[in-house]
Length: 352
Ligand code: HEM
Image 1: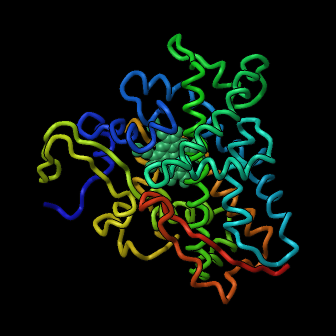
Image 2: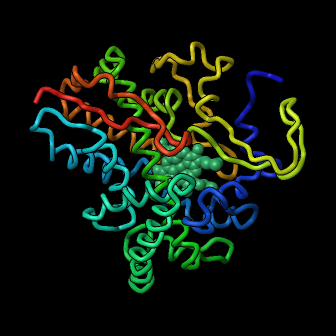
């Protein structure tokens, strides 16, 4: 058995380790028949139908029009105070507001969306809350989809309603399942990633200074190193339907599998001194966004969101630092089982 294994090739291997069997059990009951539960042609067509608004250049285009103005708006509400808990007041709200804005939904429902997003992914741990969140979210979003079918606008739901690939369109069930997946997959993950990135920089003030002194150059590398050092998605669930031998390990048929993303991103065979947070290593996290057919649909949007948020926070809150009495709280912990990780609080102050 080897200590270091190649996860990038493994997650591409849908035949040996399909995603669908795991997700049908872990999220299917509350999210429905989502991309994660699909395979083969159905997955390819459905992913192509929803992909255009999340492509690299489209996502980068949101920076000026949506991401930076939204980050400024959220920070404006507390900037004069000189201190805040960034998890409570910024990192939790920002990605939900981004997705809500893209879908053309009102900002005032963002805290409700945030709760639904969290509860939906929490199905294996709190099934009752997840079922409730699924029912409430579906009741809220179904009339919105009907309204966009009747009167399409300039928003993502209208795009989904109208898009065609190989002569196929999304029906209402497919759109609803996609929207139920979008909030937990896009909002919870990005909130946690932003919290962990800020926790890393705030507890490494020399590196925070480096980012502050040259944001254009350093923000993208800080984001990449944050995702490597403490990615929000810690593991990929898979299933092994037929007996196989993988990297010297005999795996019996019917074995549930967990591939450790966070472990792969600290593999000493790939990263020198992997436990050191170092934005100058200029290394990409190989598996933070998964890989192969089920790789993250929103990776470009997530990168644009993280970069915009960090840039605006440093610009808008001069001298941003952890409050001296709250350094111990800036700790990344497990949020949903061991699958998602991020900090519970980030009590900071700045020169107001
Ligand atoms: C830092 C933030 C994010 C991280 C670390 C992340 C990570 C991941 C990972 C690891 C997967 C693969 C899961 C698997 O193979 O089992 C995934 C899939 C997915 N992500 Fe993300 N994600 C992030 C943000 C987003 C955003 C912003 C969106 C959308 C707006 C999004 C939408 C999706 C969707 C729809 C899938 C399922 C793709 C499929 O099954 O084909 N994610 N994400």
